[in-house]
Amino acid sequence: MATFFKAGSAEDLSEKMKKVLSEDEIIFSDEELLSKNRDVQKNLGEFILNMLNETLKNVSPIRKVGGILNQTILNLQCGENLNLEKFYSKLEKVFTPSIFEKNERKSTVTEENEYLKIPVYQPELSGNEKIYVNECLNTNWISSQGKFVRKFEDSFSSYLNVNHAIAVSNGTVALHLALMSLGIGEGDEVICPTLTYIASANAIRYTGATPIFADSLKDSWQIDPCDIERKITDKTRAIMPVHLYGQVCDMQKIVGIAEKYDLFVIEDCAESFGSKFKNNYAGSFGDISAFSFYGNKTITCGEGGMVVTNNETLYNRAFHLKSQGVTNHRQYWHDVIGYNYRMTNICAAIGLAQLEKADDFIFRKRQLAKWYMEFLKNVPVTFQSESQNTFHTYWMISILVPKSNQRDELRQFLQSHGIETRPLFYPVHTMPMYSKKYQKFITAEDISSRGINLPSYPALSREEVKFICEMIIKFFKNTFAER
Ligand SMILES: Cc1ncc(COP(=O)(O)O)c(C=O)c1O
Image (cartoon, rainbow, N blue to C red; front, side, top):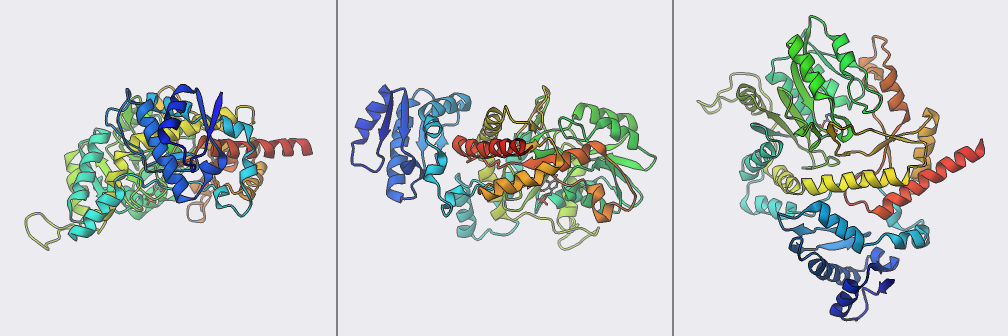
């Protein structure tokens, strides 16, 4: 039996608690859950905190619930040894989604209601971000000196289990720095996928080298190792696999090819923080790897990047080039033309706080992907596959529609219902500066023309995912009914 509670009423919290613990199901009314009234939110927040502490007392201590918003508990700080799987399964039981199955979501949402706007991504800054940033401001350490840069680098390298991490100002310069540390330049060729964000190819061009494109695999959408091998020439110096949308490339095959032809591997991990191939993190396979912490990335600094490597020589070279090529032995003495690619202490402070919550973000993003797959199981769309060897972090949960001419129509339909989406990247070889030589990449072009990135930020609720999927289902019903 379901119980409805009035979060804003004067009913005694302990009374509510007793009811919750003796009922299988607890349902808050839509108005309460969607309420923007601070008192209602506060009451509900306190109630949830008490209830969770009671319900989960044998699982792990819950220290704080910051508030709730759109059915999502924000700012939940838990004990370090919390078993997340267990915790979330309990949470799901407590917050039964059945209310959303009974009540049409539209009944609580009007056109002028902001709630309806679902962005494709938004960062979640509900951890220690403010505390750490305030520490920078209070101590005057706002530039690229300061403890958070070092702390972020150290925590990042331990997380990935690599020897060195160098914080930089964004992911594009991380790639540039990685390539330069390997000495790649004029006359060299670097093989990368054509289906990628423009920064991968541009960073190769910045060094004077030429990006040589390879096609993608049909199911994982990652670079095709067979096509890499076909593209190797006398000038090839390196392979740059790009782990797209949270999935990872087949690193066993790619590292094998690199060893066979004596090539370097630079992993572009901008979109795959936390993803794994055969239980090892993306970024730990290459000679050197690059990450991005742009605002829409799995962990963010606003703008930021990281170079990681196990090789001490590469680390020293990257570090040297990042700071204007200044020497260790004499102040203001520069022995190469270097760059200012430093990260500020403020960005590192945000990055460190984000890293503390990384596993939680990834867990919730994987949960979102499961919900999308569940709700869309009878719809003719294809998801980017996760293979036995990979751990997908679903940076962007993405689908392919059956026909390319449905892609923009579906996006527009979703937009008209307040749902923002993105098209998959256009293959780089089709862009003016890279299309001088006519080239065709059948799989990458096909994936790109049919692909959509769906809203994928960790704070999305099951109800919101359901609403998005209902709209997708409606679009396909209309489309097929018209035929
Ligand atoms: C695959 C890929 N590489 C590189 C970058 C560049 O990162 P940034 O935007 O931080 O410069 C991005 C960023 O979105 C990306 O998706």
